[in-house]
Amino acid sequence: MPEGDSLHRAARALQVLAGQVVEVETPHPRAATKRIAERLDGLRLESVEAVGKNLLLHFEGGRVLRSHLRMSGRWRVEPRGTARRGLPWLVLRGDVHEAVLWNGPILELRTPERLGPDILAEPPAYEEMLERLRSVLPTREVGDALLDQRVVAGIGNVWKAESLWEERVSPWRPLVEVADEELLAVLAAAHRLMAASVEGARSLRHVYRRAGRPCRRCGGTIRSYPQGEAARIAYWCPGCQRGGREPKS
Image 1 (cartoon, rainbow, N blue to C red):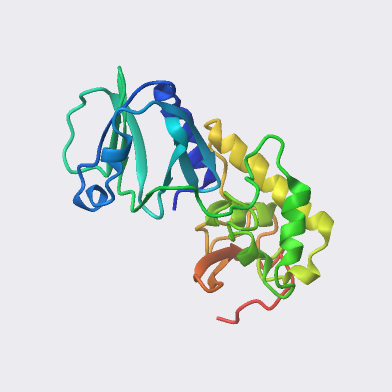
Image 2: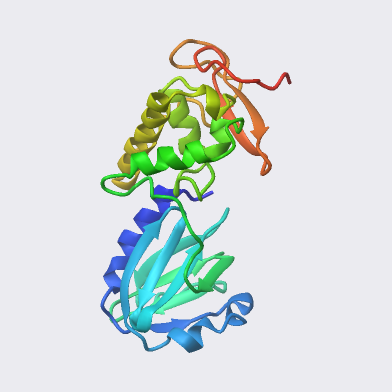
Protein backbone atom coordinates (compact mmCIF):
# COMPACT_ATOMS: atom_id res chain seq x y z
CA MET A 1 0.00 0.00 0.00
CA PRO A 2 1.34 3.46 -0.84
CA GLU A 3 2.23 5.28 2.36
CA GLY A 4 2.68 8.91 3.34
CA ASP A 5 6.16 9.21 1.85
CA SER A 6 4.91 7.95 -1.52
CA LEU A 7 2.16 10.57 -1.49
CA HIS A 8 4.63 13.33 -0.66
CA ARG A 9 6.77 12.30 -3.65
CA ALA A 10 3.68 12.36 -5.86
CA ALA A 11 2.71 15.81 -4.55
CA ARG A 12 6.21 17.06 -5.29
CA ALA A 13 6.04 15.70 -8.86
CA LEU A 14 2.63 17.30 -9.48
CA GLN A 15 3.96 20.74 -8.57
CA VAL A 16 4.91 21.18 -12.24
CA LEU A 17 1.19 21.79 -12.89
CA ALA A 18 0.59 24.18 -9.99
CA GLY A 19 -0.55 27.60 -11.17
CA GLN A 20 -1.68 26.36 -14.58
CA VAL A 21 -5.13 26.11 -16.11
CA VAL A 22 -5.52 22.38 -16.75
CA GLU A 23 -7.53 20.19 -19.08
CA VAL A 24 -9.20 17.39 -17.13
CA GLU A 25 -10.25 13.99 -18.44
CA THR A 26 -11.57 10.86 -16.73
CA PRO A 27 -11.11 8.06 -19.30
CA HIS A 28 -12.00 5.22 -16.92
CA PRO A 29 -15.77 4.57 -16.90
CA ARG A 30 -15.95 4.35 -13.10
CA ALA A 31 -14.21 7.70 -12.76
CA ALA A 32 -16.37 9.27 -15.43
CA THR A 33 -19.51 8.61 -13.39
CA LYS A 34 -18.21 10.97 -10.71
CA ARG A 35 -18.48 13.91 -13.18
CA ILE A 36 -15.18 15.31 -11.97
CA ALA A 37 -13.92 16.34 -15.41
CA GLU A 38 -17.02 18.43 -16.07
CA ARG A 39 -16.54 20.34 -12.83
CA LEU A 40 -12.77 20.88 -12.99
CA ASP A 41 -11.87 21.15 -16.67
CA GLY A 42 -10.51 24.60 -17.49
CA LEU A 43 -9.88 25.61 -13.88
CA ARG A 44 -6.53 26.65 -12.43
CA LEU A 45 -4.77 24.08 -10.23
CA GLU A 46 -3.59 26.30 -7.39
CA SER A 47 -1.66 23.82 -5.23
CA VAL A 48 -1.06 20.16 -4.44
CA GLU A 49 -0.39 18.75 -0.99
CA ALA A 50 -0.07 15.37 0.70
CA VAL A 51 -1.94 14.95 3.97
CA GLY A 52 -1.33 11.53 5.44
CA LYS A 53 -2.28 9.03 2.75
CA ASN A 54 -4.38 11.56 0.86
CA LEU A 55 -3.33 13.74 -2.07
CA LEU A 56 -5.29 17.00 -2.08
CA LEU A 57 -5.45 19.05 -5.28
CA HIS A 58 -6.70 22.59 -4.69
CA PHE A 59 -8.41 24.28 -7.63
CA GLU A 60 -9.57 27.86 -7.99
CA GLY A 61 -12.92 28.58 -6.42
CA GLY A 62 -12.15 26.53 -3.35
CA ARG A 63 -12.69 23.15 -4.97
CA VAL A 64 -10.55 20.33 -3.54
CA LEU A 65 -10.03 16.99 -5.25
CA ARG A 66 -9.05 14.21 -2.88
CA SER A 67 -7.14 11.17 -4.16
CA HIS A 68 -6.48 8.10 -2.01
CA LEU A 69 -4.46 5.34 -3.67
CA ARG A 70 -5.43 2.33 -1.53
CA MET A 71 -3.39 -0.75 -2.50
CA SER A 72 -2.44 -0.19 -6.13
CA GLY A 73 -3.05 3.41 -7.16
CA ARG A 74 -0.22 5.38 -8.77
CA TRP A 75 0.32 8.94 -10.00
CA ARG A 76 2.65 9.54 -12.95
CA VAL A 77 3.82 12.85 -14.41
CA GLU A 78 4.68 12.59 -18.10
CA PRO A 79 5.27 14.90 -21.08
CA ARG A 80 2.04 16.21 -22.55
CA GLY A 81 0.70 13.86 -25.23
CA THR A 82 2.54 10.73 -24.04
CA ALA A 83 1.05 7.62 -25.68
CA ARG A 84 -0.31 5.04 -23.24
CA ARG A 85 -2.33 1.85 -23.12
CA GLY A 86 -5.29 1.34 -20.86
CA LEU A 87 -7.71 3.73 -19.23
CA PRO A 88 -6.36 5.91 -16.43
CA TRP A 89 -8.75 7.25 -13.84
CA LEU A 90 -7.75 10.86 -14.30
CA VAL A 91 -5.59 12.99 -16.58
CA LEU A 92 -4.64 16.57 -15.70
CA ARG A 93 -3.08 18.18 -18.76
CA GLY A 94 -0.98 21.32 -18.47
CA ASP A 95 1.12 23.31 -20.93
CA VAL A 96 4.06 20.90 -21.01
CA HIS A 97 3.26 18.03 -18.65
CA GLU A 98 0.31 15.91 -17.70
CA ALA A 99 -0.41 14.05 -14.47
CA VAL A 100 -1.99 10.63 -14.84
CA LEU A 101 -3.73 8.66 -12.10
CA TRP A 102 -3.85 4.88 -12.52
CA ASN A 103 -6.00 2.57 -10.41
CA GLY A 104 -7.28 5.36 -8.19
CA PRO A 105 -10.47 3.98 -6.64
CA ILE A 106 -11.01 6.86 -4.21
CA LEU A 107 -11.37 10.12 -6.09
CA GLU A 108 -13.65 12.69 -4.52
CA LEU A 109 -14.35 16.33 -5.17
CA ARG A 110 -14.93 17.42 -1.59
CA THR A 111 -13.28 18.33 1.70
CA PRO A 112 -11.67 15.19 3.21
CA GLU A 113 -12.65 13.76 6.55
CA ARG A 114 -10.94 14.85 9.72
CA LEU A 115 -7.39 13.51 9.75
CA GLY A 116 -4.81 13.43 12.47
CA PRO A 117 -1.63 15.52 12.25
CA ASP A 118 0.64 14.59 9.35
CA ILE A 119 3.71 12.59 10.38
CA LEU A 120 5.68 14.31 7.59
CA ALA A 121 4.81 17.86 8.59
CA GLU A 122 7.76 20.17 9.34
CA PRO A 123 7.90 20.21 12.26
CA PRO A 124 5.61 17.30 13.22
CA ALA A 125 2.97 18.02 15.88
CA TYR A 126 4.24 15.31 18.21
CA GLU A 127 2.36 16.56 21.27
CA GLU A 128 -0.96 16.52 19.43
CA MET A 129 -0.19 13.02 18.12
CA LEU A 130 0.56 11.88 21.65
CA GLU A 131 -2.66 13.46 22.91
CA ARG A 132 -4.66 11.64 20.26
CA LEU A 133 -2.97 8.34 21.04
CA ARG A 134 -3.87 8.82 24.69
CA SER A 135 -7.48 9.58 23.77
CA VAL A 136 -8.15 6.18 22.21
CA LEU A 137 -8.94 3.01 24.12
CA PRO A 138 -5.94 2.38 26.42
CA THR A 139 -6.10 -1.36 25.81
CA ARG A 140 -5.67 -0.87 22.07
CA GLU A 141 -2.41 -2.31 20.78
CA VAL A 142 0.12 0.32 19.78
CA GLY A 143 0.79 -1.23 16.37
CA ASP A 144 -2.89 -1.01 15.49
CA ALA A 145 -3.28 2.54 16.84
CA LEU A 146 -0.39 3.88 14.74
CA LEU A 147 -2.27 2.94 11.56
CA ASP A 148 -5.37 4.93 12.55
CA GLN A 149 -5.32 7.95 10.22
CA ARG A 150 -7.58 9.87 12.62
CA VAL A 151 -4.79 9.66 15.20
CA VAL A 152 -1.68 10.14 13.05
CA ALA A 153 -1.94 10.67 9.30
CA GLY A 154 0.55 9.04 6.96
CA ILE A 155 2.00 6.02 8.77
CA GLY A 156 1.41 2.73 6.96
CA ASN A 157 2.39 -0.85 7.62
CA VAL A 158 6.00 -0.55 6.47
CA TRP A 159 6.95 2.39 8.66
CA LYS A 160 4.84 1.22 11.58
CA ALA A 161 6.88 -1.99 11.66
CA GLU A 162 10.24 -0.30 11.16
CA SER A 163 9.72 2.55 13.65
CA LEU A 164 8.53 0.16 16.38
CA TRP A 165 11.60 -2.02 15.76
CA GLU A 166 13.88 1.01 15.91
CA GLU A 167 12.63 1.80 19.44
CA ARG A 168 12.32 -1.85 20.63
CA VAL A 169 8.55 -1.53 21.16
CA SER A 170 6.37 -4.57 20.47
CA PRO A 171 3.34 -3.85 18.27
CA TRP A 172 1.33 -6.01 20.68
CA ARG A 173 1.81 -3.80 23.72
CA PRO A 174 -1.39 -2.01 24.78
CA LEU A 175 -1.09 1.77 24.79
CA VAL A 176 -1.55 1.86 28.56
CA GLU A 177 1.76 -0.03 28.89
CA VAL A 178 3.73 2.26 26.55
CA ALA A 179 5.29 5.32 28.17
CA ASP A 180 4.92 8.77 26.63
CA GLU A 181 8.66 8.87 25.98
CA GLU A 182 8.46 5.61 24.04
CA LEU A 183 5.52 6.79 21.94
CA LEU A 184 7.29 10.04 21.12
CA ALA A 185 10.44 8.15 20.17
CA VAL A 186 8.45 5.84 17.84
CA LEU A 187 6.77 8.83 16.19
CA ALA A 188 10.13 10.56 15.74
CA ALA A 189 11.58 7.40 14.20
CA ALA A 190 8.65 7.19 11.77
CA HIS A 191 9.14 10.82 10.77
CA ARG A 192 12.89 10.37 10.29
CA LEU A 193 12.58 7.19 8.20
CA MET A 194 9.74 8.51 6.06
CA ALA A 195 11.36 11.89 5.48
CA ALA A 196 14.49 10.10 4.26
CA SER A 197 12.35 8.02 1.92
CA VAL A 198 10.74 11.18 0.49
CA GLU A 199 14.26 12.40 -0.36
CA GLY A 200 14.97 9.15 -2.19
CA ALA A 201 16.96 7.24 0.43
CA ARG A 202 16.63 3.45 0.26
CA SER A 203 16.56 2.40 3.89
CA LEU A 204 17.42 -1.12 5.05
CA ARG A 205 14.32 -3.04 6.14
CA HIS A 206 14.83 -4.71 9.50
CA VAL A 207 11.50 -6.49 10.07
CA TYR A 208 8.99 -5.66 7.33
CA ARG A 209 8.41 -8.75 5.17
CA ARG A 210 11.31 -10.55 6.88
CA ALA A 211 9.26 -13.13 8.82
CA GLY A 212 11.26 -16.26 9.59
CA ARG A 213 14.60 -14.51 9.12
CA PRO A 214 17.03 -13.50 11.86
CA CYS A 215 16.81 -10.06 13.46
CA ARG A 216 19.74 -7.90 12.42
CA ARG A 217 20.05 -6.62 16.00
CA CYS A 218 19.61 -9.60 18.34
CA GLY A 219 19.47 -12.65 16.09
CA GLY A 220 15.95 -13.62 17.13
CA THR A 221 13.51 -14.95 14.57
CA ILE A 222 11.22 -12.29 13.10
CA ARG A 223 7.51 -13.08 13.23
CA SER A 224 4.41 -11.87 11.45
CA TYR A 225 0.71 -12.06 12.30
CA PRO A 226 -2.52 -10.19 11.39
CA GLN A 227 -3.39 -7.36 13.78
CA GLY A 228 -6.48 -5.25 14.40
CA GLU A 229 -9.91 -5.28 12.79
CA ALA A 230 -8.38 -4.69 9.36
CA ALA A 231 -6.01 -7.67 9.89
CA ARG A 232 -2.95 -5.74 8.70
CA ILE A 233 0.16 -7.90 9.04
CA ALA A 234 2.39 -6.94 11.97
CA TYR A 235 6.12 -7.74 11.76
CA TRP A 236 8.27 -7.81 14.88
CA CYS A 237 11.18 -9.49 16.63
CA PRO A 238 10.09 -11.18 19.89
CA GLY A 239 13.71 -11.15 21.03
CA CYS A 240 14.11 -7.37 21.27
CA GLN A 241 10.51 -6.11 20.99
CA ARG A 242 8.90 -7.57 24.07
CA GLY A 243 5.58 -7.04 25.82
CA GLY A 244 1.88 -7.41 25.20
CA ARG A 245 -0.02 -10.56 24.37
CA GLU A 246 1.82 -11.94 21.38
CA PRO A 247 -0.13 -14.41 19.22
CA LYS A 248 0.79 -18.02 19.86
CA SER A 249 0.80 -19.29 16.29
